[in-house]
Image (cartoon, rainbow, N blue to C red; front, side):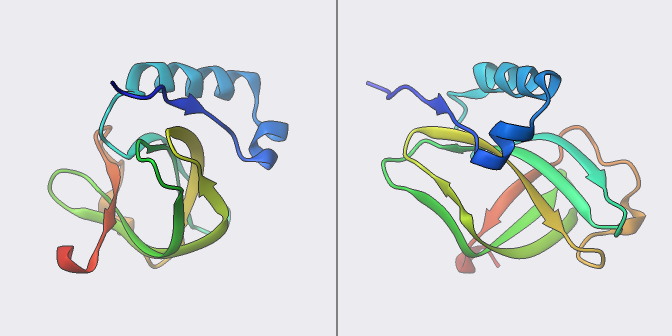
Length: 132
């Protein structure tokens, strides 16, 4: 029997998230909570420092806590790597059977500025040593 997935927010997100964004994230969670994809892309933006911000719904379907310590992530579409960076985020702890929104910041220079508009199907994937 599959465990029920819950949607949680990191405390700063819970305090500052707009009702519109919260409703959108809740809708995406309802539609994807049984997806085996660990990262569901919500939206992306470029900030004032020219960093690429990719907001995802992280889905931990496992029975262990999920953390990001020296974890390489790639943002890609079906044909190319758009961005790549290694993340260590002590504040990002995803409990078992929990989904949580998070924004990964790919610094200027770590992404393909020539990519233009990123396709809707672009997604983040974790890269492990055997994947390289």
